[in-house]
Image (tube, rainbow, N blue to C red):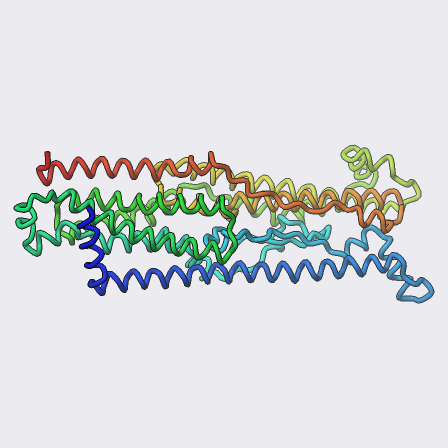
Amino acid sequence: MKHIFRYEWKLFLRNRTMLWAWVLMLGIGLYAIYYGWSFNDTQSQLITKIDTAYQVRVQKQLRHFSADTTTKEGKSAYANAHDPYMNEWYVRPVVWKRPDGLQALTLGQSDNQPFYYDLWVYNNVYNTRQIELRNPDKLLAGNFDLAFVIIYLLPLFIIACSYNIVSTDRENGITGLLAVQGIYKRNLAAGRLLFRCCLVLALALLLSITGMIINGVAAVPAVAWTGITIGYILFWFAWVYLFVGLNQSGAVTALKLVSVWIILLILVPSVLNSLQKNNEDARLEVADASREYGSRIWYMDKQLLTDTLFQVKPDWKESFARKLDTNELKSVAYTYFTMQNMNNVGRRIDSIALQQQSLIEKQNVINPVFAAQLLYNKLSGTELNNYIEFRKAASGYQEQRYDIIGSKQLAGEPLTEAAFMSYPAFTPPAAGFSVKEWLAGMIPLLCFTLLCLLLGNYYWKISHHIK
């Protein structure tokens, strides 16, 4: 094996095509790292701007609690600061999902899911008006992150540098010389594959470590990322070992390997995606929920609306001031019920999306490539479930704030500075990716790798007559 590695290393240095292909892949990977870092940096800068503007609004409202009421402007500012509803309008709280360091390496759904929400009481997180417009060309092409390079491009590089490790000896007429010297072709092929596997692993690990250092990734997720990468590369080398064991021409071997690439990375995901149910009807329900449901609530009998509100929120009834204007009570009820309805509709749609994702995950036994991509995304917190949890937490936080606002409005009490400062803080949900989930996601890769190796050994024995 030592001599094979030494020979392969010299061959690699002398083979300009292979050497420059390796360097080209390194350059592509470095660009992918820069692309992901730039994406993360853009989101982080926007979050900093949003946070800065929000803190400025908060400090401004704090000053207004003690504004000079002898002036017209001061009197208006003082009144708005102590009015729970108007205070919320001027503060306009915003929550965001701060990008994880690994997000730069696998963007997942972070490019088409909102990562911040304006939580003014009439801005519901599930309302389609909250979603930014996205460039359809970019959504179609996807993002050029490091995960894309590993999942899609490295297999092609593996095929290109390994498909002819057996056929090239036969085509160059040196198979007989190797046989005379007592060299088993399988041992030679295994050594060559192992050397090329080391080359690709060195490339992938170099890129991964570089990306993780640049983006400040913690040790535990870094180890998990490395494990996925190694498993995925071994998975593709197992396929190469299987097909070169058939002892066919290099062109036929390359054609078969590329066909596997097309099937696993394009055909199978496409078919599985087409089998999923379309939930566009549910999305139309979100578009209509605010308008139609809100209209019914607004024109409901005032007494019925009041009774319904206090039945749902009995704690508000205890603080209700009878002298409160009925239109203001109606406004509180309308805001509360439309918010709750929109949240219920949105969460139901998100629940359907999670069920579909769960169904796809169960099909990973026939889609190991998607299993690897899913592991990358879940590890970095950029999968669909992460954004659904963030959206749910944001809507829950909006409900918490309005619970205080509505209570103050119904009681006819001014909002004090102490009450303003006691608003609950938003806590974004943790990604929560466990070792058990990681192991479960690796099973399809490991099973396919082992199967290919066993089949490869079988075909080597048959086609090369090795006992």
